[in-house]
Amino acid sequence: MEKEISDAPKCWKNTSDSPGYGKAPAGRSSGEAPHPLADKLQYVAKDYAAFGGEKKNYFEGYLKQLSAWADSDFTHPSVKAVRAYVSKGIVISDLIVAKVCHVDEQGNLLTSWDSEEDQPLLMKGLPKEKGRFDQGNALVCWSVEVPGQEMSDTWKDPSLQQAWIDFDLSQGGATAFCLVSGEKFQ
Picture 1: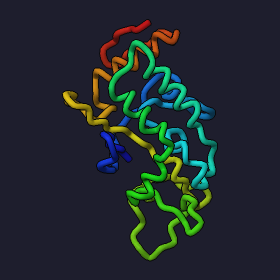
Picture 2 (picture 1 turned 60 degrees about the horizontal axis):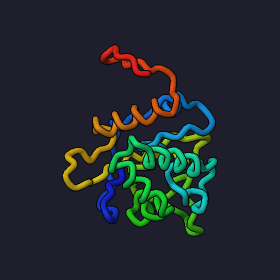
Picture 3 (picture 1 turned 45 degrees about the horizontal axis):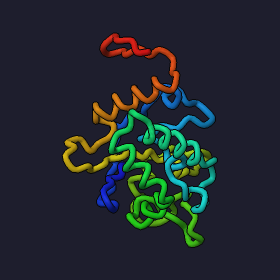
Picture 4 (picture 1 turned 120 degrees about the vertical axis):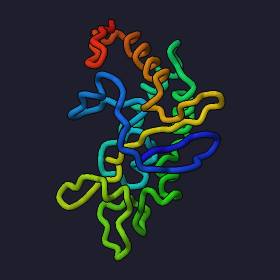
């Protein structure tokens, strides 16, 4: 799923070519290691638990990392825009209004689809555990419209990728090795 940001949400669309960012998140197998601009709803949505999200909400860690980057010398307009939006705490609310996420009569995120209607695209793509799915597992990839900036898809923006690399390295990260170029980074 992708969120396009300007002053207000404009569109939601599904995307499948959105990698995560950073060393720690890339290796996440358990525990908290947020991806700053592409992660699951349970990370990016402050209001996930308020809508009955069953998994641990990692929003505070996500926001802390995103804010550290936004406040650093290596910030980027897209980082600041995403932080401003997620800080409002209405990601799940907006997704419900846009009919991307779905809730039951009590306002809790659905964990199954029992309707005669076609199953929504989001739910078709979620993994099932014991016959149930968790909408908190949906991957959010941000698109940010910034005047004068050509690339709105954050996962395709080389200037944003470089800003993340520079920020991550400034945090004392270990030496990284690019498998494509063979270049080493300190």
